Image 1 (tube, rainbow, N blue to C red):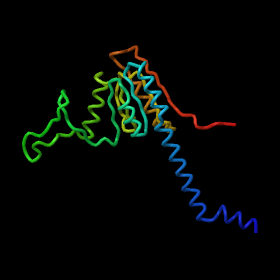
Image 2: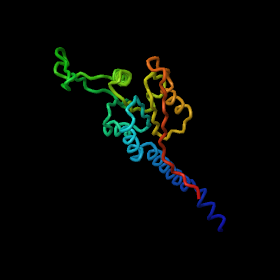
Image 3: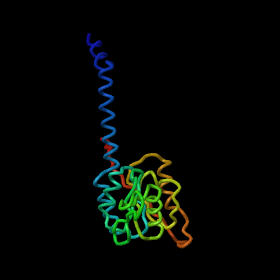
Image 4: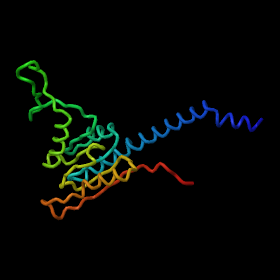
Length: 193
């Protein structure tokens, strides 16, 4: 009878499903904590006060990318895959509107491709010192002036990490003595007894 109760407890499909859902919820919460963490935000803020060189900050949490962008005080730009469109403005901040046609008076918008190109151009030209981004700019990004890579995502995918680090290894013909420093910020959430 004791054996049957044990089997019922551990192998009952309803129990297995409940335990599985609980496990998935816990893993998701842990992953979110690892990617978007106030201690990581504070660490990047502290570094930004000392690092005045072209830098890419990588994170896989759109919320953290947005938080870093709004919190940092250095010249910066952000780009992530959820950015759909933004209003076009003149240099003085005034919104640009359509002057004629069906859209007359409506605000003109930059689309995703233009936003991405502008972000890259701002960091290339030096208008921005920090590029805060996620997976969308981990590959095929040529920014030879980058001197610091700060990885805050906690991503354990070796290929993604290698691609991000490679963004800083690009040869800069305008600065042949360039060195790139790679900084990994992680939360050690495993404790051995």
